[in-house]
Image (cartoon, rainbow, N blue to C red; front, side):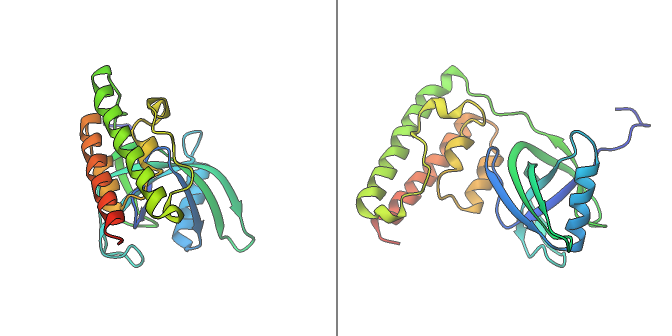
Length: 214
């Protein structure tokens, strides 16, 4: 990029949860500023059908004044169902992770200068720890099925390494009942080893909740 090149600006949609790569994201757009954001996304060219999603760290997004995390995920717009009054229902999918370089003024909607983060690649050295994690996750699911069968999440993978071909460890994570803070920890990981550590902690916490009936 030269000094004459325009700075790429990403439309942003702060939320109360962290979007993970590969995760479906249904949204209803009704605020005027996000109606404008959607129109701009759809009109901005072949790579424009997306926006950035970041987790709100503190405060409430509506009305401003919130504090946002700087690591997020691009939401790729898959389908738009527009209403005559300007509202719209979106079907999106989490794509690449990004880092916010600079937050811009929320005018006419939240925007930021971002850089795309590299995908976390699985190396052969990671396979042993992934297999151990898979056993731990299967044990958690089996315990839930025995103690509280109604609480078993729908659509769980088999926790095979073949599940991880497209979005890596996120493929397992998006099917587990993980809270916003741990989702954000996963997004901020730099390696598969870091991701395995996060999901190990998550599995231990979920198992403890099941055993103590919380």
